[in-house]
Amino acid sequence: MTTGDEAHERRTRALLAQLGTAMIAAGQPVQEIEEELVELGGVLGYPDVQLAVGPTGLQVTLTEGGASTNRSAPRGLQLHQAASVRRIRYQLVRGELGPEQAREQLTAATRRPVGHPWWVVALAWPVLAVGIALILQPGWANVAAAGIGAVIVYGLMQLAGRYQVVTALLPTLAAFLVSLVVFGAANAGLLEGPLRTVLPPLAVLLPGALVVNGMSELAAGHMQAGSARLTYGLVQLGLFALGLLMATTLLRVPTSALANIRVDEIGWGGAVVGLLLIGLSICLMEGVPLRMQGWVVLVLALAFSAQVAGQALGSVALGGFLGAIAASLGASVVEMRRPQLARLVLFLPAFWLLVPGSLGLVGVMELAAGRQSATDVALSVLGVAIAIALGLLVGSSLGRSLRGRLAVDLAPA
Image (cartoon, rainbow, N blue to C red; front, side, top):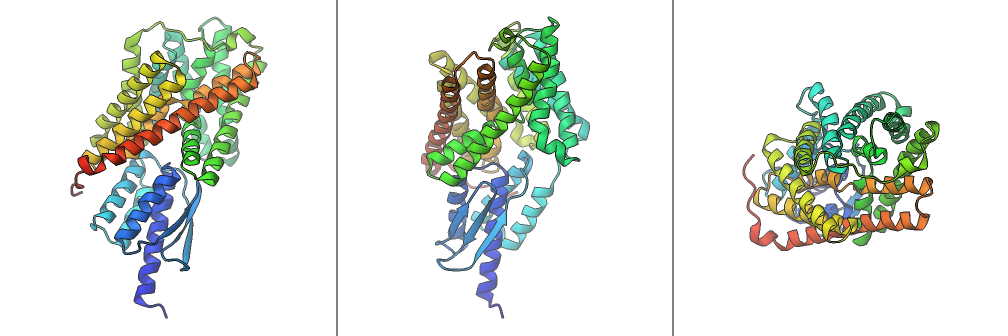
């Protein structure tokens, strides 16, 4: 027979496992998940909780030598789902939810679809690509090509939801088809700088967050999770580069067309418009609540301003480092003052601006074209990823140091 204490312990383990796997699916680094679950375990009466968190699941034990629960993480959550998960954790810490209520709400949150009509979400994809192109490659023809490429990527995403084979080949297929359009237009003399034009439609799929999270986990001492994420992200990057290389080979693109050239026909105003379009489109795609959308744009603006300043003062790596600090610290401060606004939801869109995966893809293509050595490419990619990861750690540490001074109570739902 199961005693009341054993039943309570089982329910608590199940709750921590379900909450932890939802946090994994939201894209939160392993070290943050462990820290927050241990804090919650203490609130629930189990200060000695032990965790083994990985990138695909976790194991939780409430007492030393006690029973354990294993749970696999669901598929990646969208930002509106991640915001709900974050709020549930806050309410648990404050004692406003019981374990059974929290589990029911977690199940509902991870199944909740985006509240916008499908055509609004579909329209947000080319808008996002146009916004990134206005910052990365601000030429009129380049922006138009980026929008067309995003429509292709969205169509492939819909097919991937139905056919497993498309899911497995998605990085290569997306890079191949987008590259056919962009480099075909370049061969016809319709645009310049095709290599950077390919990146905006693919930015949503590029493994920038994986690589940076992997580096931050390695820096925090989580070797298994960090190395697994980093390896997976680099493999995905290679698959994108393979598709791009296949398209350029098929079209017989000359080596000179693979140079990392930036076109600037629109001027600084394009970057401002692009920033607003990125914030708007991400909120529409990910179902971000209306009350959070202005804060998302604010954190994006902070990250972009710091990144531009760092690049002007030093290098791409310095820009990534300062941008990551600004995004992480800014999101942390906003969450302290508005606890219902999840820091992770405010911070993750900044990856579309920092685009470490894009920089890596450019390097791999220049390597394939013989424009750079393998050592230079590897050092460049790792340097940017490490700089952003360190910026993330510094920003998070600064945010934690300010928690006692700036934090306020969570307002009622």
